[in-house]
Image 1 (cartoon, one colour):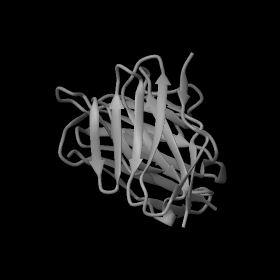
Image 2 (image 1 turned 120 degrees about the vertical axis):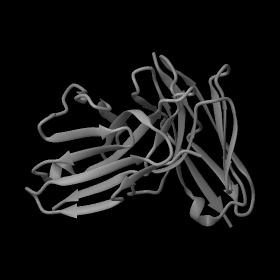
Image 3 (image 1 turned 60 degrees about the vertical axis):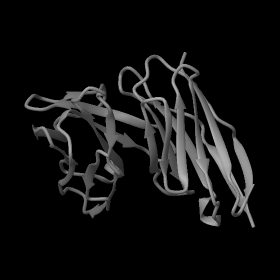
Length: 116
Length: 109
């Protein structure tokens, strides 16, 4: 079946550095990709929606200059957390929408970010 | 309003089978997820159903009936390490995840 590969699974970084998370659809073309974030003991929250070749649409309250999303191809989207701070420590998960008939969504395995 | 219901707690015996049910009422439907979460850890993705039917993945299976707003997670050959919370979540029409409160599964030897 379709697989979405998300990398890295875990990342620890120093405050002030930038971290890039990759999301790849391995055997289908993803017309749309979504990025989610989960705070401890809270629900998974949609951060942004990105369509290939266009700017991402960010949810209210999400800083677009801090969370840079690039969806340059139909198989790859990246989320860059710029100048990360401890409050950015969270679980980030991506999903990709298959542009085929079923338009099924497939999720990556998530990235646990810890900012020291 | 939007609502996801699942039992608060279940107990089962090691080696047995357990079924965790989830019913939902949401504004739109783009799929249903099951996650496993051990205390103090990030949730682990288990399954995603968007079409009716049963999807099997090793010891875990997930079933969906969209007309009934119902899903279940079936765990076979239970192991002690399966003791965790199991979260049901529905992706609504805005691609927001609506979460159930979770079912705490206790496995006894």
